[in-house]
Length: 301
Image 1: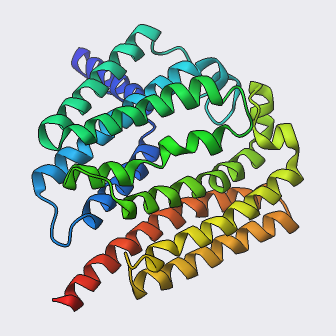
Image 2: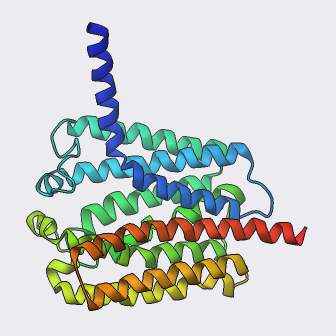
Image 3: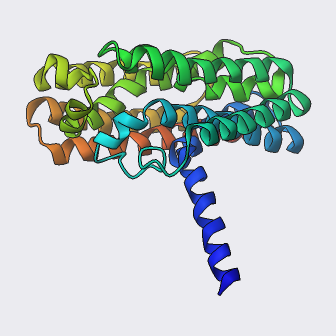
């Protein structure tokens, strides 16, 4: 019985710390970084760079999310969506979270430095600072434009992946960053609309609470139109081909349809569907970039 109890206790502790890294968000970030790695080269990414780059970026991202949970633990405790987090429930102390983040981030940066290059390490560290400090500590409680300005740090994974393989970040990599940057507001504001009561309780100046539902709905539509245009740029710049542009138009048309419905006929259920689709949209858009990249390579060969 003692061994079973100990095993359950260890498993519970691991799951609490794992939750601090916001695994689903981290997975999407690492996925976009890996796509950036593959798009950076006409051939295959070296296995050591691929594995170490993905692990290093995951670890530093997880460290940033842990700091985010620490800074927002009182806010999270007031919100139904986040009240379950171990930091909000007081199941992990401040010192433990700081130590966990330091170990995770330090090991991640060391991994990137040793197995990729110094540029990737420093860009990833800058992303950590941008999210954990600039966005979480300074922008989020101060301005309803927090997600727009702070979205720059969340948009960086493709550039990190590109830098890991090539040691530099060219214009094509920044196009990928731009797509995520423009995608972030309609993605997050859809969530903020149907969770606006949560944000009101927490006292955070999110756009639906400061400027109203109608204003937010309009801005979701406007940013989705901008996103549609931005998603065409990899094709215009000849970074991608027919497979990608067909996918981008189809996926973007569906996203525009959701945004238009939100603007014209809002409901919380529709906002929830839009939020969920936005995640599918970004995942499939970047998958289409990868598929197109290697399809063009086979045709060229």
